[in-house]
Image (tube, rainbow, N blue to C red; front, side, top):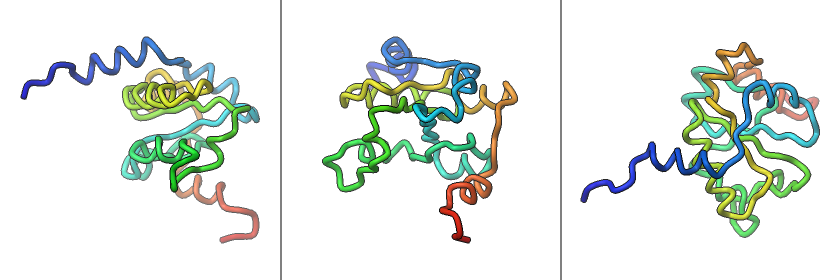
Length: 143
């Protein structure tokens, strides 16, 4: 069966419907209580390249399940309507598709980073190793 709509068309359609933020726009808001950066890349990518400080690690394959309160995998952080959830992946393709899926689920407080982690790094934005991220995410007093 031939493919009738390729990935590029799906990404282009998603990009036309989702909010896209530049690296500079996201950097300017880092540390704001109303921003939650969400890294949707897979664990191998995280191990190779690190992540954005303070990012919530939410693998793409689980995102819809973590967002839906009816799911047994629901993560309460996604229920915080006072935050904007800004997704990123490696190049901005998966995050555009993921942001579109979350919008289709009813989320209005979602966006993604143009160019993904590649552009984040190219702009010299802060990065931490996966080990640093895990250490920073541990509750105080836990080793």
